[in-house]
Length: 498
Image (cartoon, rainbow, N blue to C red; front, side, top):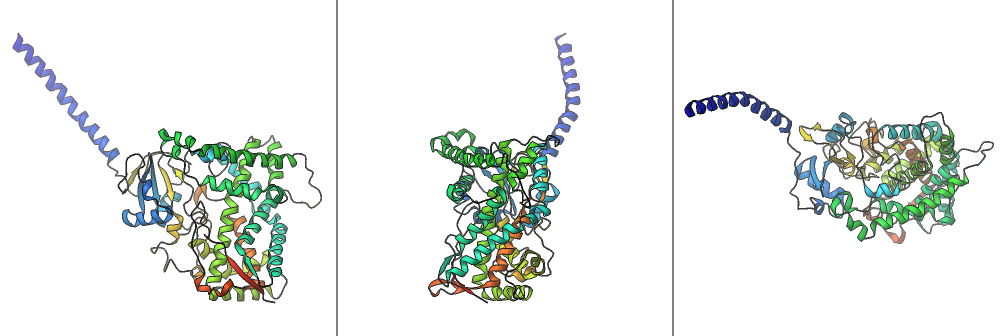
């Protein structure tokens, strides 16, 4: 009986094994099919901090150098956060076009959450219905072509003030960087608020805000070490800056609460958002914090990026006198001796547009585009990418990639003549304003500001460097930050051309 029992047990075991083998094989095959996609190449990492030690003082350059070794799509581990880095037009196209919806989210970051009212703005809010409706409202009501044109008088008046300052300098040294910074800030203030706020130090407040935005927050990448951000005072400083700017914005918004728009007066951004806030038919609740978050977006996205683009374009023109001369000839021909270049003249200036594009290629205003986050698992360039993986597009490296650009380190505006490459995010070798769903919606507003002031400056003035410094010796050292700005201000001496 014991033998029979043993045989029965063996028989049952054999049957079970026979049944389990196909199941095990199926599971193995299924597991293998799901995991057969490898991860992108990745440099060795350290415990806890991952690859942070390899970013160096200039992350855009460090990431470019790493990509030369590990490939144009590589995987880094920033603390506990897996992060893809794209450094070529081909990879950028796969992320920003082919898989744009998958990579349309934003990561949850501590500092933007503090500064932008829980990331309720357009730039940092998570992808979803809230973001879609908010972006639609902003694009249609604040940044449409009609709305941008409505602020023409503001741009022309501020351009005239720059011309007047240069004329009054009478050949003495002028801080062109400061002058262009004031132009940008004044236009944005008048467009958003209706006036400037020198007496309240708004520009200084905004600078502290932007600097804080670029500060490294340990807790965003190594959550269990978030106590360091409290101990170092980082979060406290962020809250203090946020409170200071919030107090300022609250005062401005209250000023516009019962403001009457009379005659031909143009509505400011705050006026428009206030009207939207009162409109109960939209099906979207625009509360006051969201309104303030959107206004901050306008300044953060506009002030530093437009200013740095202008500063670098002017620097490159002075460093390359032949390019300056060619541009002046074009502007003179179209200006025909009139007192100023007008906005309707800009479409005729092909070389001006080439100069601006070339400056933006070499000096991408946001060298590392705002990080995205994968919403789902995706196959990217043959690699398996899990959800919640962050993505960084190195626009600075892509703009200097020899695969896409001949002599990429040279300033040659001619490369954009008879060239279909545009700003709109359809050409992935050129991404000064990003692309896809999360691309910058204010590019038209920015380009008009840049082109108008540059055209008028070179139309009216010739420039030299102080102290007998030759054009070719102009210091072009870059500073590190959220945007890439000149390390030292651009000092010039201006002389009237006519």
